[in-house]
Image 1 (cartoon, one colour):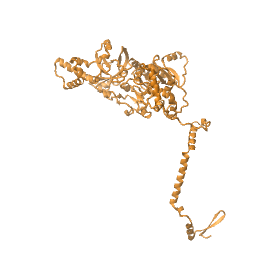
Image 2 (tube, rainbow, N blue to C red):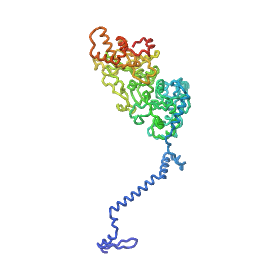
Image 3 (cartoon, rainbow, N blue to C red):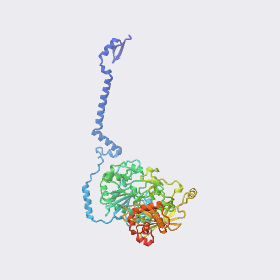
Image 4 (cartoon, rainbow, N blue to C red):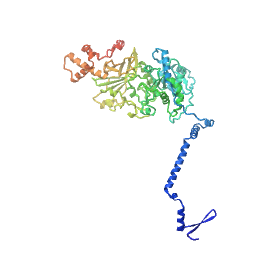
Length: 616
């Protein structure tokens, strides 16, 4: 065989191929030139890509593919149920319902006309729904006993299942029935989906408590209030707060969390359930109609209050914030929050098991008993702040009625005292100031500036005046303070007890609240008395009044004794006060005007002052 001739067998036939230049040139002239072109290959690739993409899109967006995909997802969730209903297409979640606002408003107006002039709101118009479980109720029922009034209040404790009563516990069970709300078992919630990986499946059950309370059909109900079994309510202040709103409207009342992270994760416009949620009767009526369908649209939410908020949002009702509801998403020492309560009626606190005992030397439950005793003695003024000064000894008194008296060894301005001392951490154990959605301040690290604490020991009531006894708490570093702060001594080092006389607040104080005023009344070196009450109308507050009164007193003594002239500072402060009170001073002698600043508005407290022989 020659080198230029090659025989190739194909299908048992031999084809002779020549590799000579003449043969190759003649074969190249017979082939199409575009097959060797790169442009032709690119065109073919683009055409194939376009055709395959078109075929894929038509397949994805076809009705057949959509039905098959939904059927596969349903089978993936519940394969045993689905194979029995292969030919039934699952319906999509229903959209939020459309409520006829005109019809609802007409019904509300008709109801108002039928009722006419309603009587004043009281506890009998409120139904409480307390969320609990069969595992926790036997322990946490002690918290409910602290504030529940069986003869004046209506409500139920909603459990996940029936309680298993212990043997030989008949007398205790009878006492519980008399002292606690009636126990109810919630409806079955197994039909509701719950897909949150870190939450608890009890969320849908607890979120339906208001709707289940509504379906009980109790008469003469204006408000439904939902809370947890570890929530402490102040019932009297709750009535005062709810009386500000029209119960015939759709009203959703509550408060946010103290933790910024919690508000960001859930919602800044959501009422947290532990603090308590108040829902008007018409809103509960609307929720009972839509809530079951609404819950199907939110299987991924975490708990109960966010599910309730989602359904309320579908009705278009915003949150009405009240600063007296406290979620208390904190841990550790709650002193900073209790001693800096907002200027608003105290309504509730939550998570009382997660914080330290309120009072030194008492257990958590005993401290709560003293706490609620003080709350019941003077509900409107409980935990209200008052700040006054002793300029002669340069002392600042910060009073939290029913809890503590703080004595600072220097003059501390009200703007700083209104900030909460950060003695606690957030629920997620973070302590940075940016974690809290309110004003905080660091504790004094210098022992010389640290305040002395006088905690409540006992409280009594004389007429409508409360008298509290506050005992001095032990100093942790008393010896160190004596050494390093010499010659400055401890504030009121000889005083072991402070008596605080609290005058009652006016009925409408909660409508336009204001921080209370106080006056220092030193009886002797061992006893100190503080007088706390509403600031008189037109008063400038405890700080300005205390400054002006001390200056007036010194100036008056100098004028009466015809001694040296007052200092320039005294004249400036005196002129400043006279300018703002010139109308009052023009109608009374000088001596009467000076004494006028050293008392409260006696028109509201004449009977108490005569009984106690107290001249402020």
